[in-house]
Image (cartoon, rainbow, N blue to C red; front, side):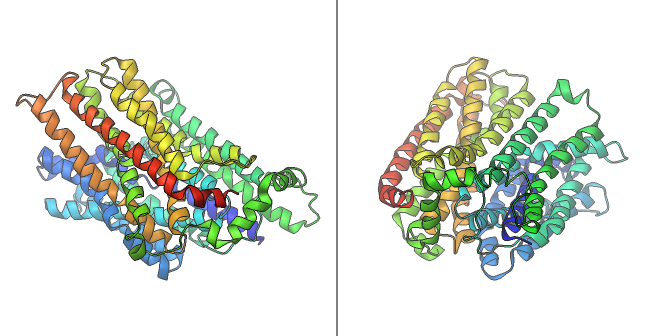
Length: 514
């Protein structure tokens, strides 16, 4: 099989894996039944939600495994951890297991949350190593599908929930078996190989981007109440499934082109083979190829985690992520409570808005790659992060306004920019610290997410409680006023740190994009 076909197959595998890897977003669907079964307090329930995120603290285990084991085995180990973590909870929920304590559930939730890191590590390595020139586009495309996970799981649950199984049980059952099933299907195509000499046309990325946008638009529109009520659940699942299978046409087209080496076959990724690729070469593709072949320019350093922890750039980057993307994720996790305190009733539409903006935000690096690949000017990763953090800071201060319009605008901005930052960060890690130990290095970076969730979430809860005057609920703008001021100020500080990081790495990026 042609090497380009194998490249595209690995990208399709990553897309499918990411589309079902948002299992932690389904926690609210079954948390209430767990709360009743083992008589949990609200604090204990909040700790279970934290346990799912806390699995990222041990995500570096998957990075170490990826250094010594084939990626297909890392994938199967990760999906098996999810099978155990969610599967045992499912058996408990359907009374096949007589009793589980709170700490049993906590450990199982932690294990299930960690399984997500293993699958993420595989997907990131595939995108970064198999597409050394277009890594930013590959990362943006694959991570974008994580935002569709809640829609995909909900569509399937709507189909199977009527078949003598409750919704909560259906979510847990799918969480346990769907990642493993997709992992087994994609395992033969999950391999990290030296593809640097294999040329991948930009036309293929354009086609995949169009498919991704169409898939996201369909998934979001079909999940809206007015539309979903008219569509039968089975038709909706078939529609989403068909959209997810469309990217397979790219590797198929490359395979057919490999058979007919005369290049006369007109396929989706080679339709501009004799025209677009020549234009790209004239506009700097040769320079990009030489950059990818030169390890001194392709990465600022290619180092392991021990050396990375000694670098000032690492700590700057970590706090930029902590005060940017992590802060945005904390806001989105508390969106329901924030909306309720403002007297906003249509919370589901607000969540749909944040999911949609997050999905398209993750695609922003892909669009950025496409635009700047036609010119000699490209925006370095740290500068892109800084550009995303400026509107996020403004959005937090905009929330001090009590109108519904300000809530909608702020949610859209934070959702889109947070999605973009999480995608851009993957490329920055590989650019600053190399690809050799990328799996470990990036999992160390994202370990700040549960820490930030705990710190920022608890601070917000304390301020919320102080404004509630001893009541269980707090209503009014004052409930989160000081929280928004604190978040906006911290995000502004993060913007300054991002600019400092940009200045420190400017020389490297100027050489990389020369």
